[in-house]
Picture 1 (cartoon, rainbow, N blue to C red):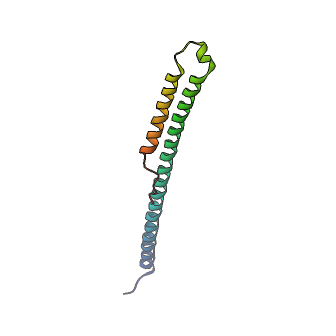
Picture 2 (picture 1 turned 135 degrees about the vertical axis):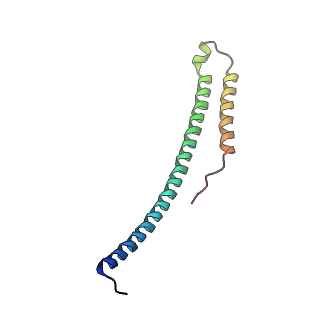
Length: 106
């Protein structure tokens, strides 16, 4: 079978198109893996930020409870405020312990 120049050119373009398609599929698969990794890292950062917020709330509650201005305002006993701070700290601890550790999803 004798191929004309146009027919040969067409076959080369079809082969090149198949290669480009395969390369695009590979790049999309790599992008999906990168997005999965990024999503995991964002979730972990959100978890750390939440835990830090809870820790700051506990620290603030304890500091307010121990402040000298508290006695001047005639507030209740220091023990109740410390108990509230301990409750916040305990909830922080329980949330940290209940979460599974980070896993690699590669």
